[in-house]
Image 1: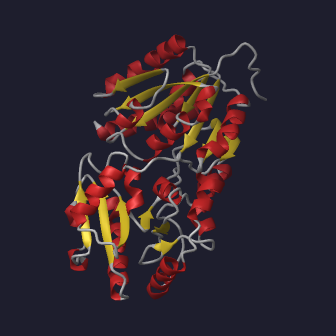
Image 2: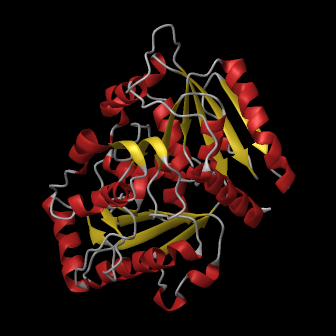
Length: 384
């Protein structure tokens, strides 16, 4: 059953939980959705709850933006009161929650149309019972269907908006690495943390492998949060260029993707690179080098939302040969994938249909919501 929308306006409140630095994939997913043509029909407001504000969210043009800072556990007691104030002030009809830990706020706000998006990532046990659930991958969809986590499931692979190149930054980057016309540029954009240790070192290895096969390859690794201990220094040669920057190249880093011939990435970065028709490599759980995304491997990469959990195993020599072949046959078609699977404008009508036909929420506190609330407190307590 869906709620009759007669006499209702289309005011949507997006609720986000920030327990780190306020950057990352799901912030850009929110930005892409709210900057798409769906904004012609819906008025979006944002509430960011957590230990840090988010520049990405603050930069979105929306009806209102509120940051509810949590500095101590007692601050959580005021959250529901503040959410209810915002709901009344903005005359909210729908709450779209982007973190499962704060879904209890959606339910207890009094708003009867609620939806949760799980933006990829591993399957987790501590997950609330929800009426309407958007998932980015079949990996997540299969798992949460088995748990009967929702009444209404929607599979919408992560989407991005087309974007312009920043040619000024691209030229500066070329100058920094001593770019020459014959260079084949590999680009990886990632936070330099233990989480990306495997994929960063694999990126260095494939660059070395290409050079051993007489390809003049250079790797540009752009990132922040530097943890130099994760880099295997025994792999380093003069073909690897580290660009550690807080803002100059990491802010809207997608705008410099066009510098490369080969993009090595995960998640939405791969989708952004496909919009520029780049050769794309992705790390997998079972191969020792990043694997070429092609017509054969694309379905499996999509199944796992282009994460490093992709279970593809290919021998190193075969991987190198595939990449060299892709460089020389000039038949790369990743732009076709973008147009078909990754352009958010292609699913604006899908989102509109979802918002128009939400299963109503029963706004009552119960044992499942209590568990959701307690898990939220546990997560907050770890971060403050």
